[in-house]
Length: 163
Image (tube, rainbow, N blue to C red; front, side, top):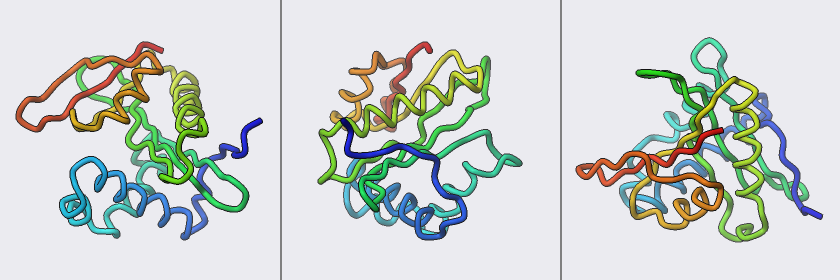
């Protein structure tokens, strides 16, 4: 039995929104390095970005959190990404606190995000990351994602899967 539960982010809770924003920063620090990740975006921008995903006027999106006891230990941010061709479901961020990893939390967050995407009518799910982010690449590959695009200049990749 899981020792955590998934739920939507409480958009009325300033502390939850701020926590997800801080963990977005921690994700950047893990992927691009401590200094660059810390200075890439201001905390105000990150908080606004979390809120943007929750504002139906701007975005069809959702933020799911994993809670263990009284603590949020992980999150994923998903949205409908419109561009050329069909819209896709996009994982913007998936994060689990280091001490809470390897307990199935990230797997559950991905499954919740994919379920949400299917409910939005998406037929494809994707995420972007650095080609050096081996842990995230392996996690998504475990869920049948594969590299669909590679940008040699930025060293970023896009992982995709049909839903």
